[in-house]
Image (cartoon, rainbow, N blue to C red; front, top):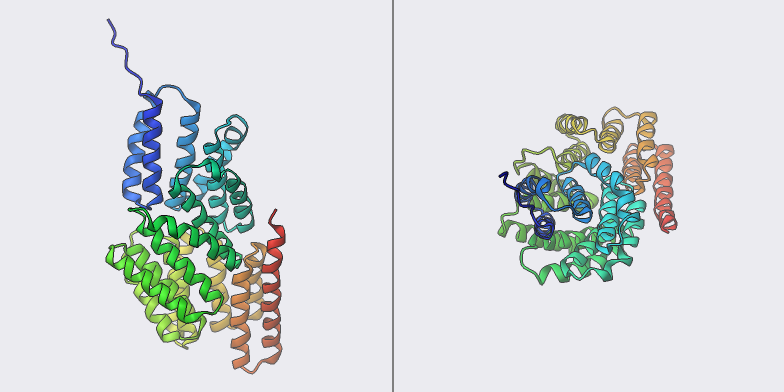
Length: 370
């Protein structure tokens, strides 16, 4: 008599999915990858349940965001849209869809779509009993509001997130990131001493917990804080510290750090070293098809090296088309100060005006929030 294979209870798989998501929230890539492989093996033998399969695909889209596989995450969310919103009444599944959809748009640098998705997710947040899940929501909202320079909204969400993460073990990575978020907002508000103290505190926590990625990110952000104040030697040392952390992955941090090292060396007048870092950054950006940083690496070249305002403006259009107005404001101000030193009053005035216009556009972005 042929043996009938016992099906795995879908409730058990759902519990495994919950455990997997907890590990993802802790940003533990190796452990999350191992759990994913085990779950995939169980799915063909699971009792039929569409909600559990939908839940798997949602958490998988979140996993792909964590490992920076944004295109696959977007494809998964696109396929699931009808199922997640039209064929299920499960509040949790709808909440996760809007949360992860917002995160996908955030990584695609479409911050208005991200925030509008988060606002829909927030309406369902009171149906989510898990305090850590609510903290994760506030953390994601805080970084999106930061990107459109809504600093007080960002600080408010970050404060809510930090309180919950500190109250639970296992979320030290998020505690570190919340401290950095506070610091980033303080930089925008030009509260330099507070920002520096917060970054140093975050770096210390990361070092004590052997979280090398967060430590390197802390040095990178501290470097930006110094560079914004034209404390270029201190900025250079922080960016060099970031590059000293070995990484086998070509993460977005690697590209960003090459860009900031190149920019800082150009400002220091050390063009040869600046070119070396620019070429490294461009190679990484080409490998992962990072259009924004390719444009930014061209921008510093056409400002500080082969000074060419027409080519500079052409690359600036890439940032404008993506509504990256804080970057436009930052680079326009740098151009204005550079031409002021060159005693070129026409170009200096032009880019000071560009910086002001970009800051106005940041304010207008908030009008697009539904």
